Image: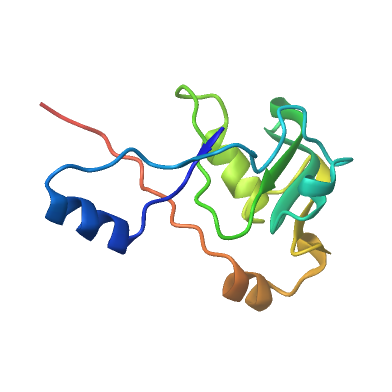
Length: 134
């Protein structure tokens, strides 16, 4: 189940009326629960990884998995500390080598694209590690 993204007009209208309305529920999800590289919706994703496997040295961090990022949508990767979220982003953005699999940007293998073209088409803003002191 997906929720319609509110736009500025929705916000202003609800603000003027004094109470925000519940967002419209959209019945069709972007990807099905079992979506993988054989699914038509998966093939249409702007960024997709097929059988992506990543690791550091001899340690495998991400076992082979399929992942897709739809066009014109905000996508979040959520999980506990140390589960591989940042590692996956690095692999998908070509800043970390894959152990296996392939990443495609608009249907083209990202490994074969010139770096300047990848940089024009995709941006990643990594957050620096911080050490907090009391």
